[in-house]
Length: 246
Image 1 (spheres, rainbow, N blue to C red):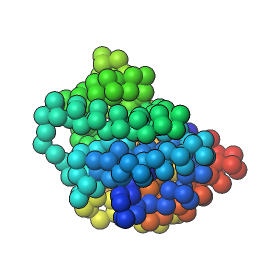
Image 2 (cartoon, rainbow, N blue to C red):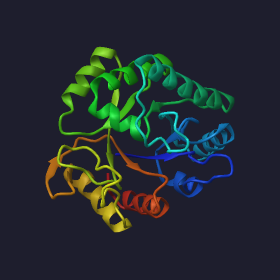
Image 3 (cartoon, rainbow, N blue to C red):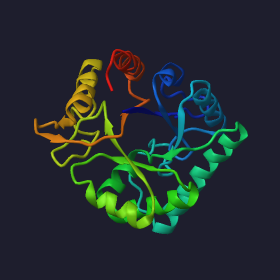
Image 4 (cartoon, one colour):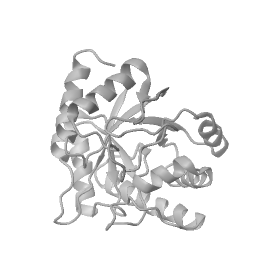
């Protein structure tokens, strides 16, 4: 199972995450594209860092929300969302082209990601935009119990998807992420994160904040690069996998 992390989320003089420490431990780097975080120089440096460590590069577009770090939902038209995604994916593809790299997948950020997982119309627009801006690239979506409608929509649009589980976030009873404003939404210790990862990898399931357990069929695991334990968890998971975990 591939390990992914949201990367390149610094902006100007403002630093977010510990990319240099996390990058050697992961398989997939989802690089911010300038709308919720990042800037052209940060994008260039993050692409170079991914290439140095042989890490697959993905576009990590979000709502145009630098002040809110992309975690606020925007009421926008289908035309606007389609254009925003094309603009951001195109920006990262241009940065990659300068370094003879390519964008291999797309994973939306924050509020956009959460919105598309609950609104099939938004998800369809995202899929259409990814297919148009990054032909052949899969879209990363959340591994939820009711996955068939997502697969059906992807087949209709003509795009592949990768299902993702989260190492450091709590789940609600419907299989979605608990709102960050609720206590316990983000796991507070490396031990809790490792425990959830072990459950996902070894048993194919997650336990919700209320104690309910459900199955998840997952292609990739996410570590949030802005989390306080990102570096420690990434290194621990790298060692865990080296010791025989799949």
